[in-house]
Length: 199
Length: 103
Length: 245
Image (cartoon, rainbow over the protein chains, first blue to last red):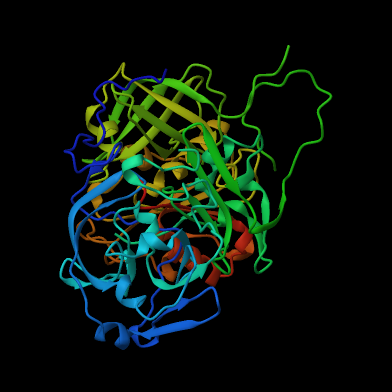
């Protein structure tokens, strides 16, 4: 039994039914990082989808801007227990990017400028569940939050929403990413509190 | 807020849960560029979601440590080797329980 | 009889005294039964737990040499922090936290060392350096120490009275980054090559240099020391990052 420190309460942990178990609310936007912040100028930025059969689909920043965008308002949940409600984004739905991609793969490995990776089943990226987001709260997405563009998959813990996203590899076999090979859960559903690999 | 890093000194407490010697005073060699130096001089990001220690020369990952409830995951694949200074095995009776630091 | 494990374990620590240092920082003295002793420059992890079992943990440098089972930490309140406001505003004598340590074997000064020492502290980075100054005095070491202490303004000085008192063999110089005392000869500004050239030791003396403070300060001071010819192996750094609170 741990010793209780009289008068210590910690951050408020209560929340309504929009708060997954074990989370607390924040108003600011905490920055967590596993390395130096990459600075990627948009004139050298590109996004690629590589299929399991070796085909490559490529978008420049201009290509991305020319695609129809959406403005999702979503709640986001970080595995380090903070949640932020009603965040407003602008980005391109992955349904748009996958329109001409022919694939039978079940798995996606997302990779980023700076070397970060994260994995998820391909179906978690489709049907209106994920975006390549390039604006947050009405402004260009700042580099510390993943700008110029990050993946946004708000129904999973935020480490799946890779900052500085560079591309997606489609795979027949699941390939665990950066945190998924270091003890974090392979799927990461905040409502099931899938934080660590044994959860 | 910026994404500033700490240095390897910040690993001392978390690694002391796992190792009986102070690993931050050990010399590690980066598997990517070969640079050798004290673990205490690595660039450390974290502590959440996990501690990520990068080579101060090439910024590649040397060590990762995630602490969950009742378990820790340690990944050392970015380190070729660790050189740890150790005293020779003591023939002495019980020593007082002072900090056991090499050097 | 088996030897007790040397691996640091969580120990109960009871607050026995508090000294204010500045408007936002104070020194806390804890009684930690079974404390194994420590070296100047080492730090500890502090864990605080709420009634409902929620707990949070932070690292703090030890501010003084061990005194039996008593240890001292100096804690600065971090705005919007979680643990530091508790330690600087709420906790009272008799309250308990848990402490694990000591940890860190790199950023340490040992009393048997004979090299001259340069201490370069930025803001709260003075804390482990003060432990070294106190350990030197306690050991009666005659190794010459120089301290360069960089502060935002005169009101943010820790250990003001103690550093004012004469301590033979210790030279103390202050730099101010935002505002200076009236009539101060040096303009307010961040640490420069001249500050380290004048207030430090020549590289020929092969001093051990300890630099502690916020990341930007440490990077800059360490780069300047290397530019002055100090060997990388003699410049030891400890950064206070943004992860405290």
